[in-house]
Image (cartoon, rainbow, N blue to C red; front, side):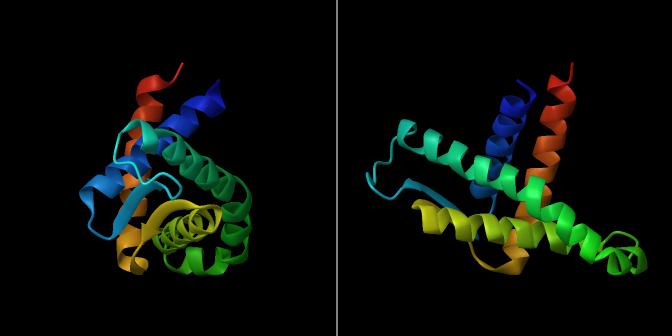
Length: 128
């Protein structure tokens, strides 16, 4: 149940980032091309699943490898790491056939902040 709530929180964060930023696009699955909301919900959950897997597996390894840089920058390098993880998620989603695109590191950085804030708020609101 906790994983499902985390998945929905990531989906809400990704939707908010795509809605607020011009550099993040989510067009839904590439097979249908439908503009309906139903055609975008399952692909959005797919992208949030990819983001959850990336944050679970890849992010801790990157944090461990970049620990000295994180220490020197007092943790501000985490913004770059989160942006790179969002870019990695977009690349994997494109290869899977989900039309989720992030244009550049700046858009990814702002988008990662939006996803983090929305996810944090929803996690706090839905916490047991």
